[in-house]
Image (cartoon, rainbow, N blue to C red; front, side):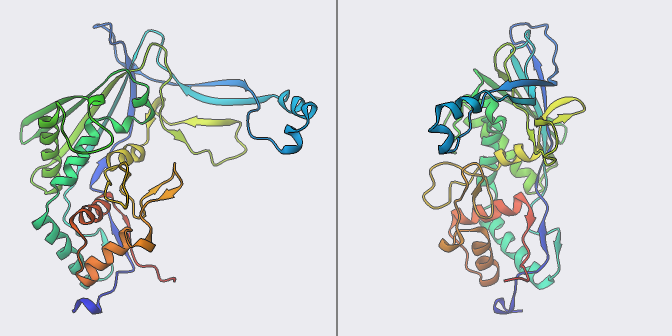
Length: 339
């Protein structure tokens, strides 16, 4: 079939190739060699907060009305997670299985399209390979980006990664805060170890070896300090608790999706890039309320992907990395029947 006769399959989906577990929160004391590692538990507390939200002009312009509003009780029941008063270190562990990336979708209802798609991916793998993507994933594991707010509040963070390949054990230790979050030039004291970790990721994606990484971060937060698991989305507005934290068998935890988002925060190829963003079809960053890859400038995933597969019009190398990063991320990419 000629390329001109091809159309994007209406049913098209890819499974993720970085299969990441939830993160499990524990705690210990860095100053005590005999200290045990115990779970971080979620505690519930009720507080009387102040009224601090923006008020209407009719209230702010009338001192008596504002005083009356301020006197109202702002009662809240919330979850919180803190280290014990005898522990100063947050320990977070998770695992990542690297699955082979061949370009073959998990579901596709058009075999001609699937062949063109697989040929496109195999062409990329043959000419570019996944080394650049693997290096960026490895860097984000090593720099503890995935700790999110916990990284900001830590004095020091040690990240340990272990992996066994064909009866050979590999282990790496990183001073996470010495590795930048803003780029991937990999020019630091951990360059060799990051490159070796990237090589393991590459082997997994290329199906050269079965790769599962076991990752542990030890972050010195301070005795009794608050730590930050994932927050649950409260859909039942009738609930009395306004903030619920994620628990795994009674222990604090972080959603696998949140860790995954951090690991794939490798896109510095979007227009006028100033910092890495997560690999997303429209370059969406919800915390900023912005889509950095707008279809009107033809830099979104679907525009680049369709031109590459359907018209054999390959984008430049950087955008090829981006498109493959989206496929490794996984998702549903079929053509909609609606216009």
